[in-house]
Image (cartoon, rainbow, N blue to C red; front, top):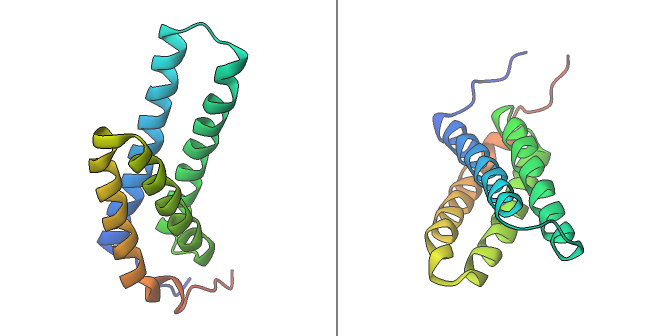
Length: 120
């Protein structure tokens, strides 16, 4: 492949996505260990699980500078920012971090558009 290497900033963003996935998995573990599993918890646990998988998939795509991963990351920034704001004061640091990641991704959009078509 004649693609340039992934910029260090994008690699850091990938690590942030993996961190969010791990935090989500820890949240699921805490909920399951402290509460009885009921029908009311199935939807939130399912959504958190789906988000965890999405964070991991998007981080892999970002590392490989795929266009779809940039779009997915922007979507996760929006979803994460909104849910962080809904959590109140405790969600503000996560929301702020997500906004910074979103701004960085918008600034570095060129990494995902120029020369990202792989002819393997």
